[in-house]
Length: 263
Image 1 (cartoon, rainbow, N blue to C red):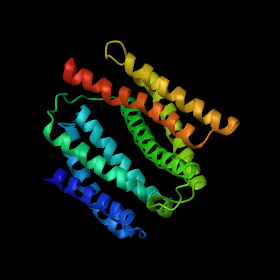
Image 2 (image 1 turned 60 degrees about the vertical axis):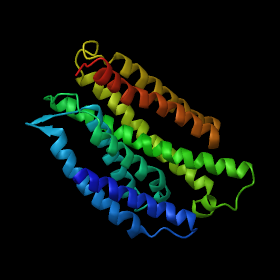
Image 3 (image 1 turned 180 degrees about the vertical axis):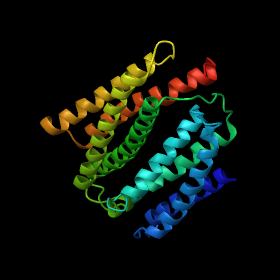
Image 4 (image 1 turned 120 degrees about the vertical axis):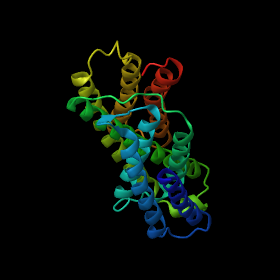
């Protein structure tokens, strides 16, 4: 019931953002925040009951995705108080609702485990890094759309009229990228410190893919500050880096849980 409430209210928030775009009017913040906050509260209660089992954590693929959805929406909600992030609700809220629907019907295969405090720190930083990189990628999508419209001289369209200038959007994208990159770096460091026996836990491939993603983000940051990379080139590199991160995060857990039944 709580998860359904979260799904419905997330969709309402996303529809409010989409309606503002379609009707070319300013977004009323209460129409976004009110249902999103209700959904976040319901989602929080559901996560507590699903993830914490007999004093242990059930970090299954579905629970992990659900936590990432919660973190991403929470980050956007808090940040949108001071940054122009309201248009991300158009993409974020429906996508989050779809992920939660999958979590409702897919089987939970992973067993609850007890984690050390160091591992809990690593897990939290990793999930926060993934969440911030989701926001970065959504921002990159909008920057890519704006760049395309600018190149095609299509400046009088609905999206361009309600978005901040491209330069502001790019600056915001790189701010998110820097935050996500620092969190991802911290995740890699804490993983090296606290994860025991990566080979036995089948984490080598996940680590390699994460390092490749980290490398793409590092190249982009260097290229931006020293070579002036921006616009579509920057957006595409973010897509590639996030793609490797997604495979490392979702793909590896899916294979281990649903194909190899290694819990």
